[in-house]
Length: 196
Image (cartoon, rainbow, N blue to C red):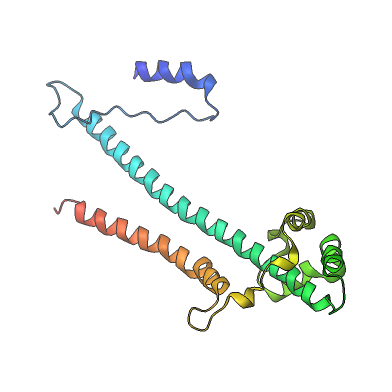
């Protein structure tokens, strides 16, 4: 205990956390403990260490799934935003008009075309989940607006629409994956517990 206290005291100025780290006194050898060792303390520390290690792994898996879901939401929002710009472009483009001029006008002043408001009313995407128009202005300077296909053109009769499958994954598949993972962990833990 004195060694732990001295170690924590000496490294505390280097740590960014205000709480001291948890330190475990464990022996992970398969050999039995020495005669006179604090057996109950070491066994309790070992159980606490293994429990915390399992919880850290579980949280890591859940955090990875949550991170994948956040990324999928960003991809979906971006795809729908580009599609909204593209739909506006096709609605305002004339046969003999200059496509570059029309696209630049839409990109430079999306508020005149109500792009953000239209996307919020047509979908369940909040305006606050979307990047600022400046981000899309820079994006469309690198990628020409009229070079993108409409989302409807990516749909097929047999496979459906990729954007709809992404919506299903965000709403159902990824949350169900967390539930399945928790269920499988609890089944394994129930099997591993000794029966009394």
